[in-house]
Length: 432
Ligand code: CMC
Image (cartoon, rainbow, N blue to C red; front, side, top):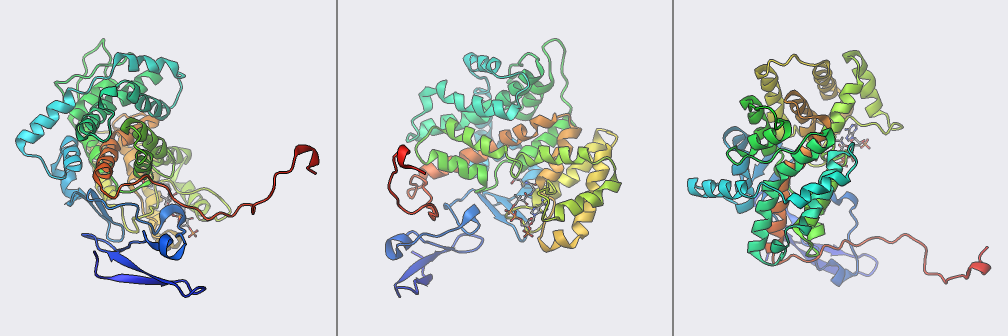
C-alpha cells in the first residue's frame, strides 16, 4: 500500500475519502480511485481518458515531455540500432532479451506457424476485389477463431502462448495475402528458409513465375519500421484489445477489434492520410495555405502526421525514422519525389509557427513512415496493414499481461447520463 494519499471532499455533504497515491517506476503518480464510488457515490468524468490510467503495465514507458520511449526499459533508439523485429517481439512478450538458445527456439516456433489454414485462404474470394486490405485484415484475423479452436481457452497460459505465436507468425502471411487478393495475383506461400521481414517482402512482391531477390536496404528499413511500431502502451487500439478481451473473448476476436481501431485516421490510418495529404499539394508554394487551413477553427482540416496525445516534444520514433528516410532514399538511389520536398517545407514552416509551437504539435512517426513505405514500394493502402502487423506483438503482450493481472476485471466504464428524466410510455394513438 502506498504511503501518500489525496483526500477528496464533497463540499455538498462534507463527506471525505482518502485515496492512495500509487508510484510507478517512472512517470507521474496515479490516484487510486477504486473506492471513490463506494465511499462518495460518485464517478470520475474524463472523455478521451486524458487523466485516466486504465491498468498497471510493465511493457512500454513513454515520457511525452522528454520524448522518451522504452520497451521493457530499453530505449527505442538502442533497439532500433542493434535489435531485430523478432528479438523485440521476444522482449515485449517475455520481458527480457533472449539468450542465443531462446532466440533460436523462438525463431523456429514462429517460422513453423507461418502458414494459414487453406480454408481460411478461401475466405478472401468472398471480399470485393477492390476492398481495402485493412477491411480484409479485420475479417480474416477475426475468422482465425474459427480455425484454431485448439488454443482458445484463454485461462490456460499454454493456449495463450500458442495463440500469441500463431498471431505473430501468421500476420505477415495474412497481410501479404490481403494485398495479393486486392491486385489479383496468386498468393505466395511463406518460405521458412527466410527471416521474418524477408519472408513478408517475398510474399508481398514475388510471383510464382519469377525468381525474387530481396533488397537488403528494403529489408533493413522494414525491420526498423516494425521495431518502431511494435508497441505504444495504452493507445486506442491497445485499449480496444484490452477492453474486448476483458470479457474473456478470444485473442483473435480482440485483435481483430484492435485492427479496426487502428485503421482510423487519428491513429494508425494517419500514415496513409499523410501521403494523401502530401499528394494533394502540387507544389511547395501551396504549403502556407495548408498551414492556414490547419489553424482555422472553422475548418475541420488537420495537418496529418502532426500532434500526439502524449508526445509534447518530438516523437522519438519520428526522429529515428526521419534519419532513416534520408538514408533509404540515398541507398536506393531513388530520385526524391516532389512530395518529399513538400513534406520538408511543411515540417519547416509548422515547426516555426506559433500555433504549432504553443500547442506542442510536432511531426509524429506517421509523418515519415509513409515516405519510407513509399520509397521501398509498399503500396499506399498497405501502410496501415504493415503498422497492424508490427503492432500485433504489442497488442498480444498487453493482452497476456492483462490475463495474468490479478486485478483484471471486465472493463466497464461508467457515464454521466444527460438524457430524458424517467417518463411513462404513451401509446401510439395518444402521442401528439
Ligand atoms: N493540425 C492542426 N491542429 C491540431 C492538430 C493537427 N494535426 N493536432 C492537434 N491540433 C490542435 C487542436 O485543434 C487543438 O487546438 P485548440 O486547443 O486550439 O482547440 C489542440 O491542437 C489539441 O488537440 P486535441 O485534438 O485536443 O489533441 P488530442 O490529444 O485529442 O489529439 C491527435 C491527438 C494525434 C489525434 C491529433 O493531434 C491529430 O488529429 N493529429 C493528426 C492525425 C495524426 O497524425 N495521427 C497520428 C498520431 S501518432 C500515431 C498513432 O498514435 O497511431
